[in-house]
Image (spheres, helix red, strand yellow):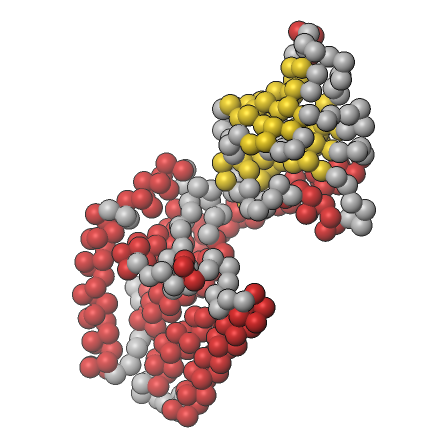
Length: 369
């Protein structure tokens, strides 16, 4: 899908190269390069049409071809702010204030300032020097790199959200930052670059550690579940993400953990994924209490979590053999056809634990609380 920005990027690069004082590319080669990118894009759309019956896949034409100029501008500002100033590593309140603020007066002010400044840069490039500078080229490349995602919803609920959408932007933005700092006096430039790189490396290592912990949880849960077998294994709290890094997620069906398990294992096991949640610490867990013959109460042991399902917040639902009622920090589960061969597992820290239930129990005594 990123191929659709190739013509725009090559157009910027070719323009920058064609009008340099020392000619580094001919018009003929420019047309060949630009034409090849057009062919790649055409082939992508044609292949998509042949395979799935529509020209635009993934989010669909209604979303990707719906251009709302104010929204495009705000989203671009949000991405630049995110990747340039590391806003996504701040608290949710900070992220919300900054990103939502760009929807209001700050975004308008930036636009009012940006239009004449951008126009002046282009005029200077075309009319005076007839060539794009390195900084102007990087700005244009950054803008083009965001075109495929600028009309999508900018999600900042968790820090790593939308990271993949800003990959190309971060490349050009990083080069641009070094380029602009290099124009400052040598000592001042060195100090600023050292500070910026130190901050960048700090947050990068923080993100790497987070993904390492995510992989630890992911691997451990998939490995430990092999120790249990039953007619059905009910998973009472499957982590959707760890601090925003995706663990087990399926937007269509309650099969996030099952899909991951099937990929790693030849033998299949029947999992019933009852509920998911956002994991914020490696010590997160729940408590399970039997409230009736086939009724259970599952509650978080800590604050800061909420129940998820299919990639979003969970709400009450029912299926053929069970129903779930969510109530803040807890939910109530009723299983219609629960048998002694079934297994109830709940996650505590990075481990699975089995809850031993009693099918002859009508009211749970205090000793089991």
